[in-house]
Image (cartoon, rainbow, N blue to C red; front, side, top):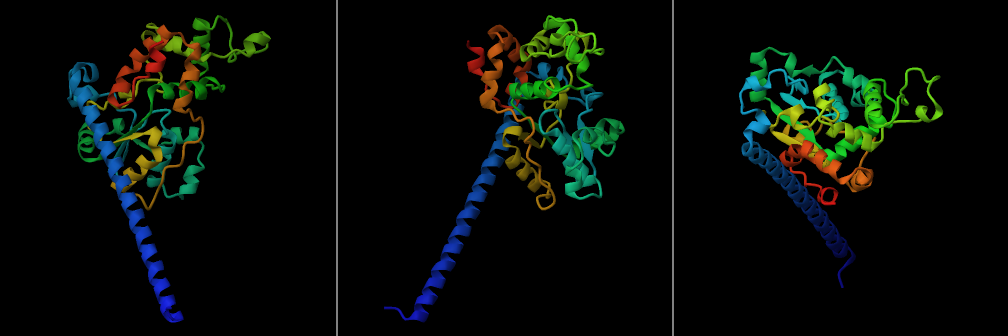
Length: 324
């Protein structure tokens, strides 16, 4: 039988070994996770290259030159301190990504930046748009800066846009709501009626249904009247991934993991983190419920409009919604 001191020594050695083994397993797990995320990045970029190459005329109008991008860089934000270019896409955590860029640029604490209301974040003059710079500067930054964007399942993004802009009264989107109701909602006035005193009780409660919104999107006349609003404009038409070679493609569905890897690439992992996007969350599992009111033919037309987003960014075709 071991003496008390020997037993204590033995227990100490065993405890140290357990700590070392736990740390080793944790380290191996972390490295495997990082390798898996990096592998996903390579797959996403390869997917982009292959789809872009498959139909150059569709994605770039047959051009890869800078001239093809002129006037189309309004969604790219540049940060000179860290050599970053971020293409923001509405309804893909863009408010929080803008907060991150504000934090990197302003002399404020992270908590102060997080407290800024979303509408003020989007109106901030402290973010530099790439499109406002001289042409030579734009070319140089596109060549040398780290460029990233985040994307989302196209149909889930549409549901999120509908919930945020039509289920809640919005001054900016009232003209869209009124137009949609007039064209597809069988009503003269809407919830957004200017003079609610003259609106009937039924009309004052009226708002565009999700199907009304889909009718608006698939109507060939819609874009002839005016281009799609950015909240439902196709993602590739906001960021032009076939003309701009992005270094990092993040997914809303894996936001935290992707953001963590991106911050490591930018050497910012000790300075900043992306806040979780808890507001207006739309799970992929609820998509079928949302589309129950949408006829099969309308779903198929909608998919054709957003098909390039599905293909470019590697999202599966929603067969259950399209096969009837």
